[in-house]
Image 1 (tube, rainbow, N blue to C red):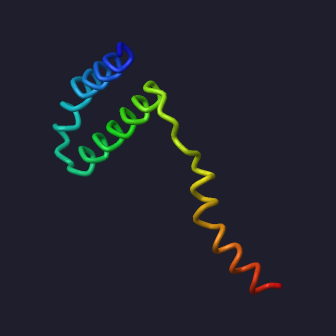
Image 2 (image 1 turned 120 degrees about the horizontal axis):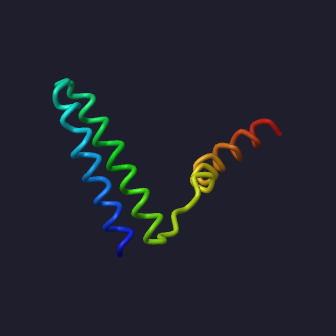
Amino acid sequence: MLKIIIILFVAAMIIFIEYPTIKQKNIKSDKVSFFMFLIIGIGINLIANINIKVPSLIKWLKIVYQPISQLVASWLS
């Protein structure tokens, strides 16, 4: 529980320190990318600290490309 509070506190400090400079630039894409990467980073850190098992990306790629591989193999044989 303490790890989660620390992660959220650090995220709040990052917003407190970095957002005013991003706001001064007044570029919407900078604001969107800043918050997008911040939310992704917070999410990954929270998942890692809660010990949720996340499937490997290789497993997802194997699930997606295995039927395609079998189809191409059947064409070539």
